[in-house]
Length: 550
Image (cartoon, rainbow, N blue to C red; front, side, top):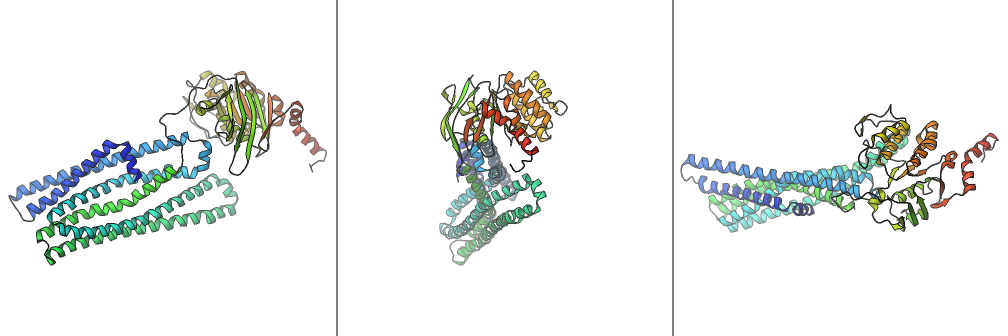
C-alpha cells in the first residue's frame, strides 16, 4: 500500500525496528506452541518447573507482543500528526483559485474524515502485522512437523484467505463510493448551516434541499455503508468457520488417512487455534486499511501545492510603481478580465468602480497576486514579479467575504501608539477587549467587524491597502468619516489605497477614478469623473420631477 510505503520512507529505522520486534514476538509465540507440544502434551520433567517455564514464556510473549503493538501504534500516531500538519501546510501554500476549484466541502472532509480514517488504520495496523508474521512463523514450524499436512491445510487456509480478500475488495469498492457520498453530504451540511437564514424564510427551498439533495445523498451513503459492512461481516464469518474446518481437516488427515500421529494433529489444531484470532483480526483490520487507502487517495487527489517546511516570503523591497502589462485572467465559464494595462504609483488614492460582474473583484485578486495572470505580467519598478510570496507582502486587503481573525500582527509586533490612534479613529474603544495582541470578543455587527478588520490591516503596516466595498456596511455618518478622514489619514501615512466603491458622491476625493466595464479597465477623465460623481443627484432630481420610468 502507498500508505505503508510512505510510513517506511519517513520512519525507516523505527519501522524496521518495530517489524523486528514483531518478528521476535511471533517467533516466541511459535516457541510457546512448540514448548506445549514437546513438554506438556506428553509431560516430560518436573511439573512445577514446566509450569514455571510456561508462565515465564507467556509473560515474555505478553511483553513482546504488547510492546510491538504499542510501538507500531505510537509510530502511526506520529505519522498521522505529521500528515495532518503537512496537509494543512500544503493548504496554506495552495493558490486561492485552486482552493476555490477544490471547494470547501472536500477540504473539510479530508481534514476530518480522511485523517480520522488514516488514524484508525494505524490503530488496527498492529493486528495485521502481528497476524501476518505469526502466520509465516507458524507455517515454518508446521512444515517441519509434517510438510504434507501443511500443504493441504495451507491450501484450505489459502482458499479461506482468497475468498476473504475478494469480500474485502467489495468492501473497498463500497467504501470508495461511500467516501464520494460523504463529500456530497458535507456540501449539504454547509448549505444548511451557511444558508440557515434563507432556509428559515423560504421553507419550500428548505424542503427542496432536504428532499432532493440531502436525502438522495444520505440514502446513497447508507446503501454503500450497509453493503461495506455486509461484505466485511461476511469475510469475518467465512474466515471464522473455515478456520474451524481447517482444524477438523488436520485431524482427518492425521487420524483418518494416517499422515501423522495424534501428537502432530494436536499440534496442528493448537497452532490453528492460536492463529485463528490473529488471522480474524487481520481480516477485520483490512477494511480500515482499505478505508485509509481510499482516504489517502482522496488527499492525493486534492492537488494541493507541493509540501514545503518553510513559510516562503521575504520583506518586500522599497518600490515606487506597480504595473500590470497586458494582464488578463479567464474563468472556466468564459468570462475574461483584460487585457489590462495599468500603473499604480506609490502613495496614490485610487477608486475602482463598475457594475456587478464587471470584473472589479477579479482585478483586485490580480493586483494582490492571489490570482496568477493567464497572460501578461506584473512589474514592480519595471522588474517582472517572480517571487509571489514577497509580492503579496506589499498588500493588506479586506474583501467583501473577509474572515476576521482575532490576533493583531505587525512586522515587529504591534505599534502601541498606532494601535491607540486607530482604535480611537474607528470609534471602537468601548467595544474592543484586548488581551495583549489578541481581541477577546469579535462577536460584533458586520459594520463593527469591518472596522476591526481595518484595524488589523493597519497594524500589519503594509504598503498597499485594498478595500472591497468596505463602507457598504457602515452607517452614513461613519461612511463619511471613512472617506473624508480615514482615507486621507492613510495617505498621510504614505499608504497606497485602492478602494472598490459605489459611493459616487465621494469620487472626487480620489486621485484617480477607474472603471471596469465587461472585464475592461478604463480611467475616467475630468469630465467623466464629474458625471460619475453627480449620478446620485441626477437620479434624485429625476425622481422628484416624476421621472420614475427612467
